[in-house]
Length: 136
Image (cartoon, rainbow, N blue to C red; front, side, top):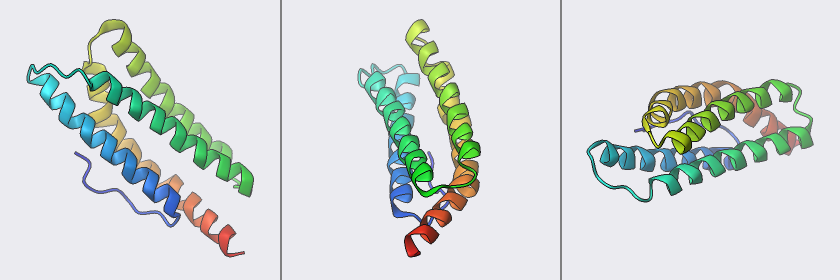
């Protein structure tokens, strides 16, 4: 479970992060049931919902960065693109093999570490930039 994430100064970003954490934590619970041998028919739907939410999350941040002329936009966007590449790869693997193990590992290990680092660095700076732009 992800219990805490760094806070950022821009409310829409903070709210999106909290929504994403809720989706991830719900998936952790479903994956626990799946690993215990339970039938979890909603697992695929919840994985797809997280993927869609993540795309929308990144798109909104990127559109705001472009609109406000955020100088390190390309670096931040590349971090999003790299994460999505990995996310898409594990979802594709799950769709083709039916084995959720690779996705499970990605969600439990890669995602929390990536989120904590990304939010504490790139999103923190980006949110502060957005806040400065609002006050101008």
